[in-house]
Length: 201
Image 1 (cartoon, rainbow, N blue to C red):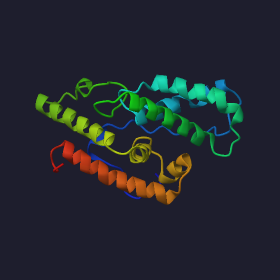
Image 2 (cartoon, rainbow, N blue to C red):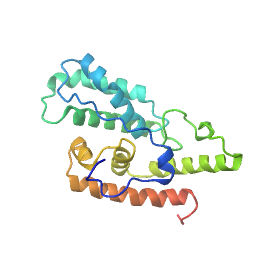
Image 3 (cartoon, rainbow, N blue to C red):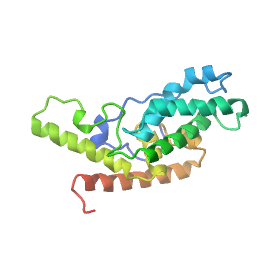
């Protein structure tokens, strides 16, 4: 779908774990009010918080803090950057603060909170256990990445954004995004294989 993707997306465990990509709201004009900003962008901010924060970060709490900041600063937003870029940085910083306060066992979706509560696939118990262990290793590997690498990998693999979209959202050079994405993949696969016991730590 995106012509600028440097390599295929991560497969293996991620294929069955990623949610369907949800595009950014097309409304990029500066919202006229806090109510409009919340109506258009609250779901997107919640998804960012869920992906960036993980299982022990309450995305609802993050969204409340995000729009508290928006309520205080919206009248000073001059449109020097895209509204999505401004909102993403607010969400990223608040989520990072929550994440530091609430350390977790592994990175994962908001629901369910525990890998043991992942729905059964109907497979044999041994196969289901292996799948659960694979999922746990996948999330723990993501949690080991530095924030800048985890963020770009999540935006690309989970959010489905192109590298150009990420560059615009993060306000960095396209080449920087591509370098970070490549390094994130290498580090992720190293950690992931270690979690599965296929590579020495």
